[in-house]
Structures are given as structure tokens and as C-alpha cells.
Amino acid sequence: MSATLVKTASTAPPAEPALRVVPTRRAGQWAAAGLVIVLLALGLVSVVRNKAFQWDVVAEYFTSASVLRGLGLTLWLTALVMALGFVLGTLLAVLRLSANPVLRAVSWGYVWFFRSTPILVQLLFWFNIGVLYPQILGVNTVNLLGPVAVAVIGLTLHEAAYAAEVVRGGILSVDRGQIEAAQSLGLGRWRRLSRIVLPQAMRAIVPPAGNMLIGTLKGTSIVSVIAVQDLLYSTQLVYHRTYEIIPLLLVATLWYVAVTSVLGIGQHYVERHYARGTAGAR
Amino acid sequence: MSSVTTADPAAGTATAKVEIRSVHKHFGPLHVLRGIDLDIRAGEVTVVLGPSGSGKSTLLRTVNHLEKVDGGTVSVDGVLVGYRRSGNKLYELREREILKQRTRIGFVFQNFHLFPHLTVLENIVEAPVSALKRPRKEAEAAARSLLERVGLADKAEAYPKQLSGGQQQRVAIARALALEPGLLLFDEPTSALDPELVGEVLDVIKDLAASGTTMIVVTHEIGFAREVADTVVFMDEGRIVEQGPPAEVLDSPRHERTRAFLSKVL
Image: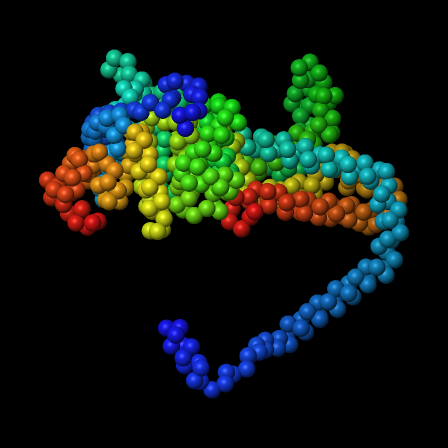
């Protein structure tokens, strides 16, 4: 067939010049983009020029010792709650998928209960646990569980309920054949979970876990109600004294935005790691 | 492969016989295996043919207890699979004991089921290291020589998705061989492959057949059955319709159903 093509081509009149593609003119798109940019610029100018934002005060407190201490607490509280929450959540997910109906029911009940009550209520409840149990192992509950310990316990138990569902979804996303292959090779239950199932489940776990991490980072600000000096509470302490409410809220906001951005970048690399071995990833 | 030291003599390369006695299996209302009796001598290659839904894959999966039987027994080398007999009772074994039995039985799946997040070498080394507690170095050396045997020596560091279907299935065969099983089970090993890749996988299986390992192969490849099988078993509707040497079953089948099936696939 190619031979006949060549033949006709040689006898044909001179070839047409190469054709140039001219895209449709999208006047509407340009206009919309221009309008949005102008609006953004107007907004930015008003924010910068409005003295009431008190940017000088923002700058003054942005790296002040008390704010940085609050930031530090927010960061380690987030990390600890995420880590403990996911350990407990993974355990709950495995229980939920076990063959034992009692364990399944307990796991289901846990998730049901801790997802059904507001985190604020849970925190206040743990904060007042001393009313129910004045002493634990002979120690006064109030001394044993300070506000920070209450924050860790309350946030972790709440986090675990959500983590359990995320991990369960991840495990269910792994092809059943992978487990059969591992069984046929004689791999034990723990090895199947840790080496075969969970690493593959991570692909489905990481995106919602990244969501949860960012949610938890900001969610820890709720501990300000039980006077734990996190990022938000440390700025509140300042403005309760100076009444510079807006600039100090801006300080907290900017820090939350900064940390969230860094976490988003980190998530990108974690996702790339767990995508290894899939098409397109090298 | 025989150069590898065997930690457990019972798990060695000794080839195994298989005895299947009046095995029944139900999936809900479906009676998929309706009393299967089959004897396979050590070192024999048995090819199981039959239309889809005839129960041949289910039968294969009962041999390494991936499916529990509802009645009857399967034994490999005289040892019951999945159960311990005491008097007239069968006690189901603990998972740990079943897993140990499975290390002596290699299973190759239709869809390979390689572990996609592990390299080819890691796929093969996993079971010897974690199930048989072999030293990693030793297991890796054995894995590399297995890869050479299936013609993929240069793919040790590749991930499964970077290989063709035929290459993946050959890795899966190497992975099953890494446990030095006395019995190999193949569940339609070429059914998920593009036609031009079937040959390379069948060649590897033929090599293995010549090496004297007991094999049960569920397949639709009649030519392969004719060439390699010692015994061909034809199944339909959960029963064995007939069995015998390939020349008998394939060329002069006694049963109408066998004839009808063969006339469709040949």
C-alpha cells in the first residue's frame, strides 16, 4: 500500500504548504481573568493599606517567644495525636476486619461512639473526668491528668475513630488476590499485614491521612478551651492583655498557613514513595 | 536449585503424591464439587480440563487449603491438608500449621498476583526469608539462579508492572519455586496472557515437568496437555467425567461431554 502511495505522490501536483492551526479567540476568558486579577489586586491593596490590620504588630509578635512556644506545642501535639491516633486506628481497622464477631462489634462501637460526639464535648468530658474518678491508682486524677495530658487523650481517641475508617478503606482497596498469594507462600498473618497489605493500602490511606493531618493541626486549636497554651491560645493570651485582637489572630493564621503548606509539600513526596512499582512511577 | 541447603528436610525437593477422596464443596446453594476422587503419583503431571464453572479451579484451590472442603479429604504425601485426623474426627489445623503445609505446595495464579510494591527479587525472596527463615543472602542467591532458570536474570531489580504479562507469570513461577515445593499447582497460568506470550510461559512449565516435580495444571491449552501430561482429567459440573493418558482422553474420549468440549476448544 505504501508503494502505491509513493507512486501517486510523485505524479501529484506540488504538495500544499504546511497548515497552521489558529486557536479560537477566547475574549470572554481574557476578560474574566483580567477582572479577577483586578479584584484580587484591589483586595490586596486594601489589606496592606488598611492601618487597622496593624501589620507592625503582626511583625512584632510573629516570632515572639510566647508565640513560638505555642507553635511548638501545636506541632508536637499534632504529631503525637496523629501518631497515636493512627496506631490505635490501625488496630481498630484490623479488629473490624477480623473474623471474631465480638472484636468486630467493639471496633464498630468505638468508631460509632467517638464519631457521634463533638470533640469539644469529649475534651470537656476528659477535663472533668476527676468528677467521675477522683482517684486513679491512688493518685488524685487532677494531678495525674493536667490539661496537656487531657488534650492528648481526648484528641487521640477522637482521631483514632477517623483513622480507623481511613485505614480500613485502605486495607479493603488491596486486591484479595494479594492476600491469597501471601497465604499460598506460607506468610504469617502479621507478615501479610505489615509487608504485603499495609504498604499497598498506603496509596489509598495517604491522601485522606494528609487531609486529617492538616485538619488535626488546625483542630488542636480547640484545646485553648481547656487552657492549653497552643499557638492560638498563646496569641489569645497576648490580645487579652493588649486588645490587639486582629493582628494577633493574623499571627496565628499566618503560622497555620505556613505549616499547612509545608505539610502539603511533604505529602506529595510521601505519595510518590508509596506509588513505587505502579505504572508511570520510577 | 538443589545446590541450596535445605534447612528442613521435609520441605526439600522430594516430590509428592496427592490423594483426593470424595471431596465436596458448596458455594452457597451452588454444589461446585460433587464427590471428586483423584490419585496423582509422585512426579506425575496431571492436566485438568473442563468448561468454565466445572469446578476445576476450586478443586485445585482445595489442594493447598485456599478453599476448605465441605466433605472428603485431600492429602499430600500421605499428610492431610488443613486437618488432623483423630479416630473418625477431622480437627482443623491452626493457621500456623496450614501455612507450614503450604510452603511445600507451590501455587501459580491466573493473574500472577505478584506483589506490585516489591521488586522481582524481593517478590521471590519474601517467602524463603519470612516463612522458612532462610538467611537473606542465601535466599537472594537462590532467587537469582531461579530467575536465570525462567530466563529473567536481568529483571531482578524491576517492578512487576514494568514487565510483560508473560514475564510476570514467569516471575510468579520462580516465586513459587523458591520454596522448593514437592508439588506445584497451576491455575490457568496462561489464561490472562496475550496469545503471543503464552508460549514462553508454557515452555517454562514444560521444563519443570521434565524435572520431575509433581504438578497439577488447570488449563485450556490442549496442545500443552497432549505434550506434557501424564494424565488428563476432564471435569464437568463438579465431577470428573473421565481421566487417562492424553492419547486416550484427547483423541478417543469415551464420553459424549468430553467429545463435545474438545470439539469446541480444538
